[in-house]
Length: 392
Image (cartoon, rainbow, N blue to C red; front, top):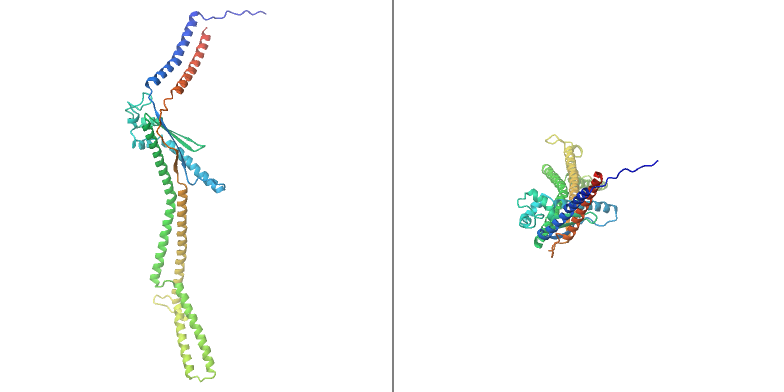
């Protein structure tokens, strides 16, 4: 079987000229015109911009090298805190709050609005606050490298002095922010410990007042000490009584009952027995202690109540003293921990006045514009070619 090829459509000369003109026109519009416009802008309109680069890091005294588990955990927590603070600084430098701080030091419109700069880089003279917030990242750009935890800030202005001044303001505002955040965190850490110490101190003061009131009411400084003293006196009297009775028994063996020595010893025994009775009554021992007072309470009951109440007050006082000392130690530990977690701005690349303009980067910009324009034209030319093949 033999196949005969049909006629192949051949574009006419008019069609070829049309598509050639379209291709040339697209090249002029997509490549040549943007490149020439960019060249004209950089040659006649673009204004030099000076840039100052500042590098710093957020550091904490608590971030130290440690091989033990606790050190690794606490060090990791402190490191995470400084990373969060670093990202906070980057966000802050693009915020309305930073713009307000910046406005107190420099006049953005005076620095960046007409007649300063050029049509693409200047700030509109009638710019609102929101417009200035949007404009801010163009003159203050911040980046954070998480691997090194370094923040890099670049400030741009139309003169070296202004760019340096902007960098100094940025560094000052960042330090103020970190100090404020760090101080607030420190106060929050210490505040709870201070409140606990205040409660413990007040409880101790109240307990001491209760003991003072008890002593005023009972007219005794320490009932337990009073009892111990009286018991000691009673024991001495009883010893003396026993000794005197022994001596009297010995004398009666060879002396008459009415002998002067016997009468003297008997008199001493009677005196000692009366003293012992008095001391036993004070201690609430025996029948004397069972005698009811004016309130109907026996001496024994009164003494027991007084001692029991005082011992309870002393136990509470000891407990509250220990609680106070514990709260005092906790406050000191909280202060040490708060000081350890203090953050500060460690600057290692300080703002320095530039000697030459960094922007515009004409060569790089022209290469980028030319490359992008050529790629766009290449894609468009490919579609033109496909369209020509389809139509013919």
